[in-house]
Image 1 (tube, rainbow, N blue to C red):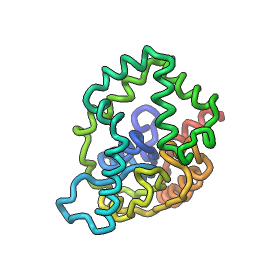
Image 2: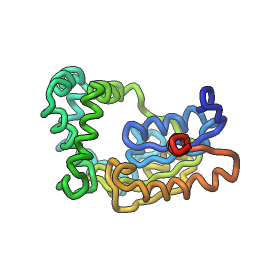
Image 3: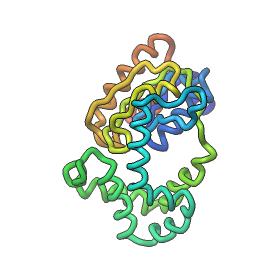
Length: 234
């Protein structure tokens, strides 16, 4: 954004792995990043400064219980990512089965993937991984996860649009405020799951505009996703 595209200030948005990258951008580059918006986990890993409140503890316990039932995929990607990747990159049935399972469980679809996604869209996602052979590289972040924690405090303006997925539903705002020292926008829309930008693009676009519009008044700020759209439009 700065060295190649020439924008000295910009905003960032992301969810899941992109949300982690977005948080690190805000923490490490406050002079260049004017603000960050995330749509998934902002759960701190260090409670040394202050123990969890009862409300936070209840959520953390519920999250741990959910992870215990859903963590098989994470366990193997965190410890043996290349082993399972070798099987998936070689199987045109196994790869979409792996991907569709995540869309069924993490989307705001109530466990019925067909109510949210048509087959062409799911097959398009699977084809992107299949044609590029990139399912294995998508697993590496899980293997590297211990080296990327904890995220330092983020002093730039922050915003959260909380995804309506089992892992994060009902997350207390106080957990996010432990990481974002200047949390200016907190929204719990009750629709749109893990793949928020894919599921509810208009909703997320409104939240992005509402958050970044005041920041644009302070100095010239660009959102990478909007910039890419503008360039394609031209």
